Amino acid sequence: MEFDKKFWATAFTLTGTIVGAGILGLPYVFSKSGFLIGVFWLFFLGVIMVFVNLCLGEVTLRTKEIHQLPGYAEKYLGKWASRIMFFAFVFGIYSALIAYLIGEGQSFSQIFNGNLDYAIYYSIGFWIVMTLLLREGLKGLKKIETWGVTVIILLILGIFIYFIGGVKVDNLSYVNYENIFLPFGVVLFSFLGFSSISELRREIKGDERKLKKAIIIGALIPVVLYILFSLIFVGVLGASVFEVATLSFGNIIVVLGIFTMLTSYFVLSFSLKDVFRFDLHDRKYSFFFVSLLPLILYLIITYFGMAGFIRVLGIGGVVSGGITGILILLMNVQAKKLGDRKSEFSVFLNWLIISILSIIFILGVIVELF
Image (cartoon, rainbow, N blue to C red; front, side, top):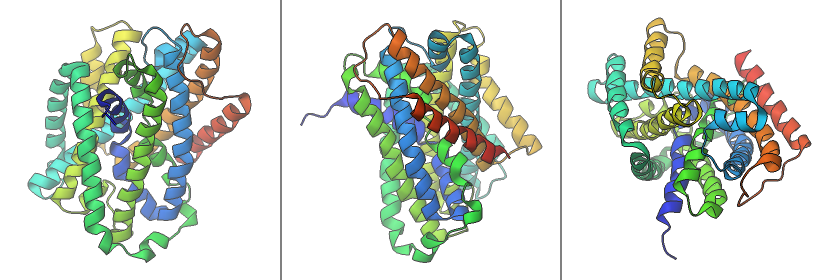
């Protein structure tokens, strides 16, 4: 069978967006709740997020013009939905970018200095490099995602093979029901890839019939990687896992964290740039909001000690993921009626499904915040 380069580049774009800072926070929350509870949340929320991603994929295929999430929300639900979607979209992206800056700074500081004392300087250096890479555009996106995700997969498999002999069954069988909901926000964050779906539509142009399969595969690869990754860290270290998991082992393992956050940082910045290009039709201030503002927020949060790595992931996951998920379901219903293009696939959706999933998202916000 001939290798479909365009298909796999498209699927890897979604995988690369999803597998970011979230994977580095999973072992920590799993070690507090219990590995089995963590795996339950992975499967439970993983299925939900694949479904919602497919709903969004259908929305993009039923629309001739290219938009980002706020643009689709305005087209099918109105300006009120566009404003809410814009808030959720931007909140989620900024949460992710801040988490990546925290994680990358700590990772580079650990590698080159053996401690976290110089994390803020390395974060600024990482920000400069990624800002320059963003100029490469969609061509650079495909190149970075394909190679970046390949490296991530190989590194995780290598870690699994190397450390599997040190896994202790007692560490994996431990369960703490008091923390049963602790992984919810971080797990939900670890599956956020909504912002890249419109990019997938553009990347696979001409082969839109393959978009459904690309979304499913691109979203399921992270589930397998998350299980293997968390199993090793929790199985070997038990409760002694750092918030940024890769800092728990040697410098070679820290490289994994650097690659996972690098790929997602690029895609999310590119998606944020698209909001100004396609939805707001404003390029004048895009550099400030896409590049400078994430750095400013990171510096403020770091200087005042307002939130750590896990807290940023949890809040970002439930707020952005919950609001965006609900709006996507509503958009899908309207797109089936009002879309100006025939979609290559259709997702079965009714108000019972919408109600159940909305309740789950809302409860997630309540549990994480209160």
